[in-house]
Image (cartoon, rainbow, N blue to C red; front, top):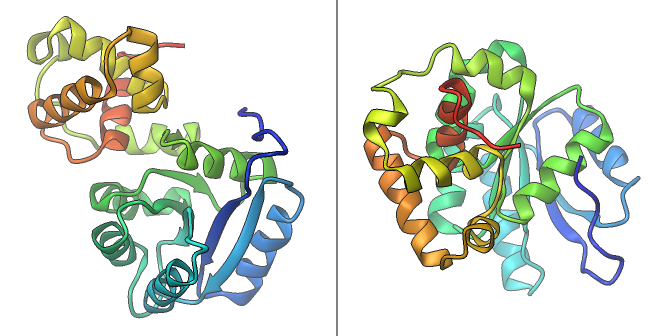
Length: 224
């Protein structure tokens, strides 16, 4: 479990998106228990979420993390993720999911979501996902990952496709570490890490580091 930032750090600004008012209010109440996370807005669908992101950005209080449901009227969580990543690439998307939404979760990851958490997760799990996203790390719920990995294609064994360095970088990605953290650990530049990650994604036929992390775990590539 990750620790909250130091008290001097500014709070992580979160937008909660869900078409059910009771669910939204429940999440907000949960997050009120944390000192380093602040819900700055709520939205009932993707269109409203995009409007809130733009409004808060213009006001000088940009959203850091969007926590979104997948199934919503109008713009669902997948389309919302695509549009947020296109228009506001600095904003992190974390999806709320259940065991019955594996295909939608895969689609959301392909669209650029940085992680996922179960809808019935506790406040510490939810907060950990938000904190990891803000740091540029990946948060993968272990139970959901087991469901997802059963359906991922395996193009070839990682030993065949990847160089030793790429395999090493992939292991750190699977551990949820950010590019800067990986760079510090391997004593290389962050730009070099980004190049390695891009090459890994291309070789494995994947589109996001979150997908790469899932793939790595399925194929036994990882660090503690």
